Image (cartoon, rainbow, N blue to C red):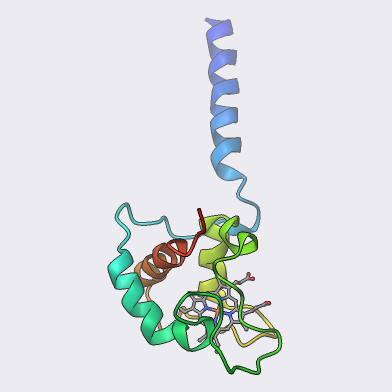
Length: 122
Ligand code: HEC
């Protein structure tokens, strides 16, 4: 039985290392199982489009420094959901990208992120 006990604790160790080690992203709310791109699109049109543009590549005529991120780019689309969620939630310091946590619920942020994922280039 001792062997089994050791095997079990190794197993538990692997599991907790796998799920516990999220770096700075601990405490994020779990994504809902169903994400709603259609709602996300509405939110995007109301809140994000004026900077990020209809196609996610940035609105024309803006003089922001830095410019709004190109949401279709690999640099953005390669990032994990948790990382982008946190960015939309908390904003990006010293840029025009504000924290949307006061305007949008967590579910709404997941929805708008689902819509942002539709900008991914094949
Ligand atoms: C007032 C203009 C503005 C609005 C509105 C805005 N953004 Fe941004 N966004 C920016 C700017 C500026 C950046 C920073 C670009 C950079 O750092 O190079 C940015 C960056 C981002 C990034 C990349 C962040 C990173 O870590 O590099 C994402 C994702 C994003 N925005 C999503 C959204 C979403 C979703 C919305 C709507 C809820 C939104 N933005 C609304 C201006 C805006």
